[in-house]
Amino acid sequence: MKKSKSECDVNKCFMCQHCLTEWRHAIAVKKKNFKVKKGQVIFNEGDPVTGVYFVYEGIVKVHKKWGPEKELIIRFASNGAIFGHRGLGGNNLYPISATALEDGIICFMDIDFFESTLKVNTGFTYNLMMFLASELQESEKKMRNLAHMSVKGRVAQALISLQHQFGTKDDGSINIELSRQDLASYAGATYETVFRVLTEMLKEEIIQSAGKKIIVRDQEKLLELTAEQL
Image (tube, helix red, strand yellow):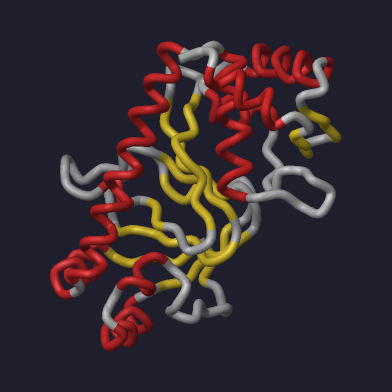
């Protein structure tokens, strides 16, 4: 990755927001900012853990192998969010991969400094623990949905989650443009099945689509599709 000349302001990322004000100087000294291009792999599942990352600009998808040629998108990181933390503990290998969905800037903290930050900043450690608990709950819900919810329900849930996380643009479209393959990976389904489901939703006027843009036209029906499957 290429180092970025654009420096973050040591205020916006998850760690900076919850650390002691006096610790931010140490963060400014230790952090490294890198430019990433759309589609660039930041680290791969199975790589040795070197540190944790934060998003300064752009969106990063966190994903895991799902079968020999498939992937499951665990979450999307943006707006100062942490990623790479799943590699803490264990066998010191990243259990997931991270790939840039668009051009952006990420911030890297090496593992030794990150662990020192946890020991010194109890507020950050507490908030990270709360974040991990919430993330675990979401992962458990996703596993339940994969086992018990139909593909149509999972696609509906994926659209609701994306809308909640990223909001909508002025034209009403969800403020993230995903390829159909990425949407399928996020919903835990095949590309062909998700394409069929989206076609059905278009005919039923639940959504409107133009290229990668998706506009939710019937929010109530979308919610019904998730509720009736559980």
